[in-house]
Image (cartoon, rainbow, N blue to C red; front, side, top):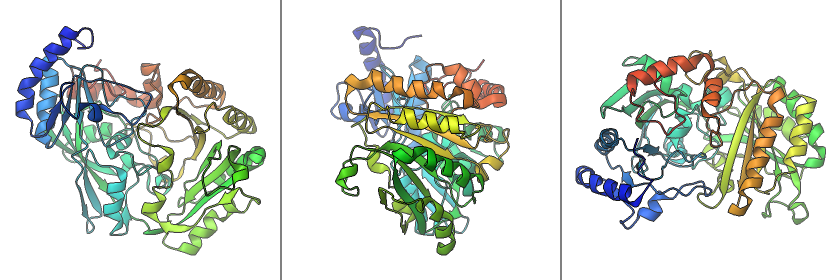
Length: 474
């Protein structure tokens, strides 16, 4: 297979072959010779520096079709870039072709049907902004700058996960450009098996150019908890969190975060640079008083560093973590594992390891699962089993490329240390760089893996879409 990265000759050949594609697309086609290429190839993860042979900034779905057909005909590695983020960098490729969907970001809301249709390049801020006008929302992530496409195709967990399920659970239709260059509308009537696979199966089956989601009444004001405590109390605080989550209403989906206090105005200066344990969550209920009561225990543990909890617009709550994840400025390496129990031993390990983070930007996140997302059977969506009560996300975020090795090692060491308590399942939107690819995917999908492989054989027998958490068409 030609990779177009081996020599200058191969890059020149790709330049020549791309001329026909340039004349076919309505949007821009950028190569290394074009103004705007350097900006267009930039990735959210500052750790990654990839130089694709061509970037198609799709202006229409037809542009996506042309690009897919070109990549298939010329056996060119093909990457798909949605609205943003992509920790592992699979949204680009060295030497191959990138389809960039960021200009396909229209959002249309039907409040009567409680549904929204959004372009594959949209971000959650755009979807939330349009739906909240009507007091509605669909489950997204916890950072508004995240693209809807990658998050949804990988499952999608956010503040609504326990009340209304995951993003993939609420996806009711997808416009998909498949490996043969055809456009398909996929829903429960047209192709229920493919819809099943798109609900967590990643980018294996085509380019998702539009998504339709089910909407739910949310907000527009939501009570929130956003409280920081000193990490000297980690054992006490995390044991409390374990008990709090054991009998938790679906309306609350909290996250406990272990990190380092930044030098920000909301914190007293004497706390800057010191470790913290924070509790974050929103109450998804129309009754403000009920919501405040549900969240109150998180705020009543005494002597916080700061308590920034408030009732605020849902769209504002969706942005509270945005500043922690700037585009292109930080290096990111994340991994995750589901655990069966937040035991005392696990709590001690998390607290000790978090305080050894090489970077003050890094965090260890404990996501309470359960509720609506856990009531979906393992074989109902490609995402698979949801029975584990907690997801541990280990996020190494740092500034200097000279610190790459130390931060990557810190992440891997923590995940390895958690394995005795782990079910083995990872959340594929926090994948590191999937160093042990097929083992990770088989474990994550479990009994659903072979069904996904069969679907891949039907939709993409030549493995055109092989750069995104690939399930080979065996």
